[in-house]
Image 1 (cartoon, rainbow, N blue to C red):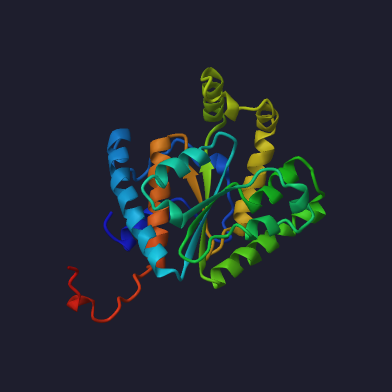
Image 2: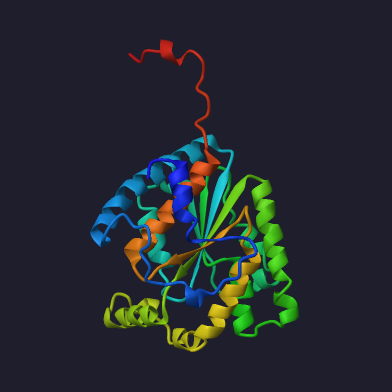
Amino acid sequence: MSDRHDHEQAIERWRVAPGDRVRLGDVATDATDGAPGDKHETEDACEELVERLAEWQGRLWAEQRQALLLVLQAMDAGGKDGTIRKVFTGVNPQGVAVSAFKAPSAEELAHDFLWRVHRRAPARGEIGVFNRSHYEDVLVVRVEELVPEAVWRPRYGAIRDFEASLGAAGTTVVKLFLHISKDEQAERFQARLDDPTKRWKFSTGDLAVRERWDDYRAAYEEAIAETSTERAPWYVVPADHKWYRNWVVLNVLLATLEGMDPQYPPEEPGLDDIVIR
């Protein structure tokens, strides 16, 4: 894919249009639609896309006028860490800020639910990556009944307003749900248990969350439908195949950056006459 139009056409299959009802059960988690070939061919294509992402990130960093926020959400073992590691492997680290949001601290709980998130929004020139995000406050709190519905339901509107305010200030927001099957999650959990170097990533509490799979899926469906907007869209990314997931994420990021079209700042006058001796 060589231009913005190609990327925009490619990513439409995963985009949730504003007002669309989301049925995750109808979206194949193992889909490979549009991939340039099999696993190896697609991985080869990803290498070129990673290089192009680095070029666009360099332009964004040099321009220092806009920012990009990537929100990653998924069921446990959905591949958020792996996505960040693979997709951003070639970028300039000083221009990318990754934030992981776990259970809120006492200080964070003393503020509104968006306080801790807004503080981590990317500065101009940066790509910010949220590994989990403000959406936990309409997902976990809903399923685990940490707060009543009268508290979490109005948060959809607060989230839309928050993301709109970021957009008005020059930050483009793009949100990805990495969509895996329950069977794939089981395989990934077992792989963690079988590998002593990965057991630290597994908690017995993950099994209790797994028991509420359908409840979490319903919460995701409503959250995505309620908050996918023109300026801050959601994309549902089939993620059972890691190689396909990475290819999709790269295409979404490139289409977004191409749409932002960051420019290098103008050079100082007279540079052509300078000779370094």
